[in-house]
Image (cartoon, rainbow, N blue to C red; front, side, top):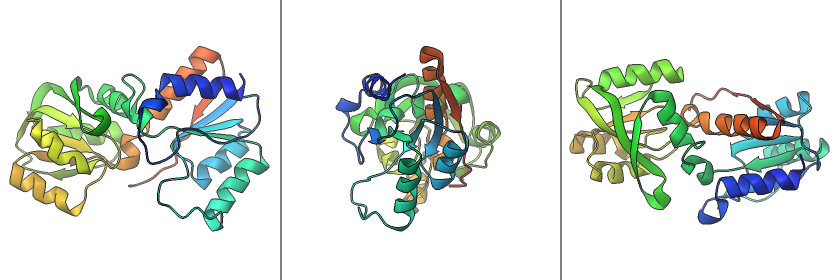
Length: 248
């Protein structure tokens, strides 16, 4: 398919126009027009770009791209090397941040719920990024953490009484610990996100609502994976997910 066709389809599918974001969504670096092979990953790191070159990809599709608000815009060092890799090999870079978090079927939050067996019920937070719902069956915080570890392949950070019963849950993938207070206001037993900050511990202790930190990278692998599979099924292009390990 053609680059412009792919970009327009993704922009429409993910409703890019309705989000206020910290970076440009969509095509960030222009490459060749014809796209037959796409490499998908969480972040457009050098390791992922090198994989794209090795696999002769026409495009890279990620959740975390470039040109973040407030960052130094000079093209030097690491940034120069990344851009040079894309430009020298004529590879397109497409990135979707908040739109990919929020999509009701292919998004990170939707896919995490599917993986974990949670039952979505509502949304909360700025631009309805956070999700609320219920567990398929009430269980202890300890059992929930063990289940998350088995599914995600990493031990989560657990803040709260391991024996606490969890029925209602809120979640938001990535670095969404800032939504913890809003999740508490929703009346949930536990909030799940990727990272924790210093205040997160105190909020959990003083509110009585548990917090589960399952990893920024680990929680956001599934949206871009699902999006690539969707493109492959719909358009017949090759879409390969490459998981560049990240302990954060």
